[in-house]
Length: 481
Image (cartoon, rainbow, N blue to C red; front, side, top):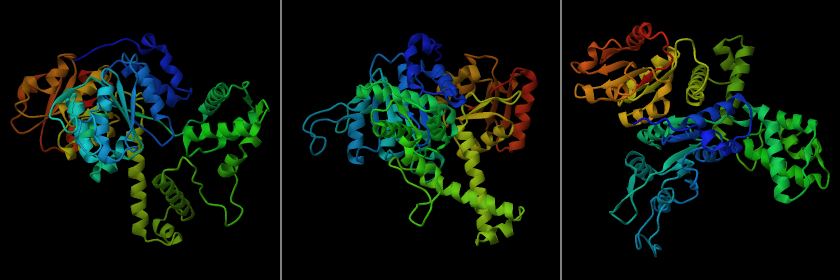
């Protein structure tokens, strides 16, 4: 189950050419790539449009033992739902109108390589069910065939959707989400890593100069400062297009000046001077409507509360809305901020003293949420799993970070359960078993194990976890499984 692998830079040092930037956020992304590249676990990359999710996927593939084979990339929104299944899994001759011959799908093309599923959040539900089987069994059937095809491929997925909302609205399968989210990587927007912009500018200038076979240009300090001050709603993609435009407007000049970026500068920095100027400009790369509207609403609420001295009723009156509406908006913003913090926090963030990471693999959603919230309140970072197979994948990737397992269990689990399998690799790992009455099993008497009988309250779980800490003075991470 456990493989150590080799260092990704020793195996293929060229992968770092894909990652441009020296910010703390990008350094953490590189650390994760180095840690998981040699393993087979699935990876879910999230972030706004244009943040470079496919580039990071290619870096992961280039750093892996599968780099000798080309990575197969699929945009899940580029094909109609009627053709997507055939594109992913292949089809036989006559399987549907227009299928004049058999064809292998993208998963077969990615055999012994990696497959990148971009915009995975837009995958239709029926295709999600088939994808889940591929992740679980590494096998599928072509459209129009009953023959089972087995493949060995590493799945890297990406999306800019809010998965929690999509799962709640039944647009995305929760079990598939946990299968994909074994290793989460979040890419911050460019406005949150402005220190990387000079390096990105240099990279794009070199690439465009080589592509157009022209002498290498440079960019003035003033222009760099101007571009760093912009918000870049289209992120890296928009920045690249801006550099391309600067090249075109600079003619034969060897230095790109601020004036060569005047269109973007006007959009980003100059205030509207008349009714014809839009409040917010939608660029060609688009923008996140919900995020923009949400930030605008939050700004209004904060201004009103400041003017009202914190009085919510007065703030609501200033905004001509009901007090209940203001309270609902405030609660929504708090929940969104908390969700973003937990979903986007990098795996290598600084940990509070004595705390660490948690993996949740409890089948019942409400219990899993309760456990996660309790551990987060204690300062732990949580990795979630809904079944033992996903939990074992997480352990495979993060075993050096794991010291405690909180496991949903039944009497039949006993010595064959998840905790036993993990302890076969790390006998000293601490565990809390969430047991049905009478279902504690043989772990009850282990000094590194506690049993919590259902139903239980959050404070009972916290007290149980704290009991284990004195036995492990070096305790840094928790896995809730």
